Amino acid sequence: MVIKNNISILTMFFIGFSFNVVAQRDTLITQEVEVVKTYNPTIASADKINDMPVINEGEQQKPTFNYSIYSQPVYSNLSVNAIKAATLDLQQSTNNGFGLVRAGLGNYSRPYGELFLNSRNTNNTIFVLHGKHISSSGKLKLKGGDKVKAPFSENEANMFIKHLYRQSVLSVNLNLEHNSFNYYGYPLYSIPSVLKAENQKINYFGKKQAFTRGGINISLKNEDTNTNFGDPLFDFDFIYRYFGTKTGQREHFGEFTTDITKPLDKGVLLLNLGATYVLTDKIYNSDLHGIGRRQQTWLTVKPAYYVGNETANIKVGFNVWYVADKDKKNQIRIAPDIRANFAPVKEIINIYVGVDGKYINNHYSKIAYENPFVNPEHDVINTFEKLHFYGGFDGKLSAKTNFKISADYSKITDKPLFYLLNHNYYYTEAGLSHKVSIFDNDFEVLYDDMDVLKLNAEIYHAASRKVDLLISGNYFIYKMKTQKSAWNLPDLEGKISLGYKITEQLSVAADVFLIGTRKALVIEALDNTEQYVSLLNYKSYNLNTVLDMNISADYKITKKISAFVQLNNLGFRKYEQWFGYTVQSFNFLGGISCSF
Image 1 (cartoon, rainbow, N blue to C red):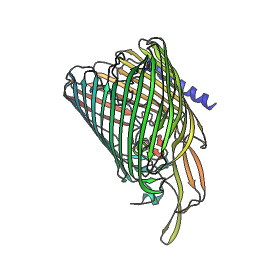
Image 2: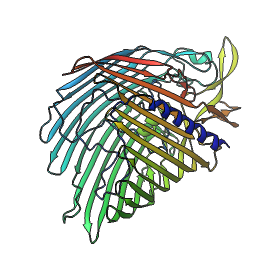
Image 3: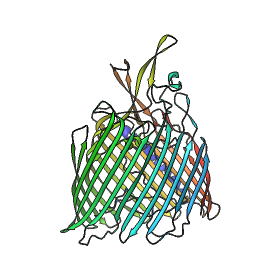
Image 4: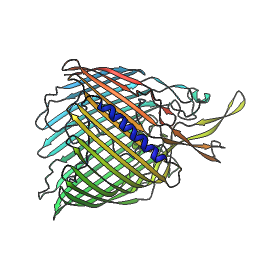
């Protein structure tokens, strides 16, 4: 009954918004839509930037879930519809000028500035610099009634270089980010006075945190899709990232992968080789039971053989991961990698089915960005998706409408799930002994094995040069091995994106996000001291459904000067991104942009 009700709610939500869209005129936003096509043996990665940077002044920035106190939807890390990086385009465009500067202000004491500088397009090289700052020093009201300081600051600087040589693209990307925030949340009740005391050391409430990440990415990609040659194609990708926190943790992450494509007999031999090294310091090493470091070396081998044509093809292979950990036994994981495609009507419909798996490196910075309010000394074990069955079909309903319908079923071991700890704190004041119940507002991690069924539907429609409409929805069913629920993971995700170019001067865009109910876990220590916990009690709390709508508009005053405004959380919903962490209510940002 619950499943039927959730599906009905999602259906009514999509249909209602669609009728509203029909009543409006078309608009154009930069919208990237991926429709799965027949398998391409060159394996161009959908997660990599394969194009030249193009500055699009009017592009609508899609909200993403991170530690910012914007109104931002909470995305499940089980979703395959990841928000991608800035759209880039290899094709030569018209004169884009030397750059673009944007500046603005918003409520919650929010200044914003962004700068793009780029070389004019040449025949084979482009160079782009990008910098951005946005921050807020506003306060938020929590569920318990307390009004707390919830400042954040996001700063980033990037440099892109791309060079085209024959059929290859050499890319270099340097980036630096510095983001800061507070552990401002507290669930359910009013904050105890002992946590409001200056320099309290009971937990992280009110403490400042900062993430600094910098690195370099060098890649070589061959864009030649012709497989009728004798020489193999060779691509590589190298990444080095440094990550540090205000609380003292440091991570060095390095990865090198290469893809080799070689015609063999009637098919194509595909080989992916990779090596990853991760070193993290000042974490709680779960094997040594104390503060220390974690050092891992990963080696991956992914061979496959592809045979077929654009109408019907199949790839058969397997993936192998070898992990050497200084404090653990060496581990080997193996998963299949098989996919078949059949296109009965070329470029109109494609049917696909497959099975594969992933061994997921839960390194420090990955978890920190997934949940920034996690215990900063966390040491999370790796997750193995040992089997992932998937299938579906996609194609075109018309020349202007693409669609995708799919189903995924995964068997996962050691899935990390987040929870809060509630315990008794004993202290002495004025010669008297006191006891107070305290929630820690930094999340701990537990693990469970789980089966996940995901149903997905997407449709993209471009009615004219003025309008884009994207509707997508995911429905999840979880089967847990030991836990009562898939803590913090939603059963439903929905998204509608609409862009409308009203006139040559005025463009508007809207995003609506729906996120189903989630359950948060609190583990309560009923009788404890600082050294010993004698009894634990598991409590579950519901996180409300999220319905979030954001609207932006851009008005061209002249050819080079524009005014913009962004209105976020138009429903004034103070939902929780994580248990106890309420987001900002309605907020706006407005300003001026100038190209030169």
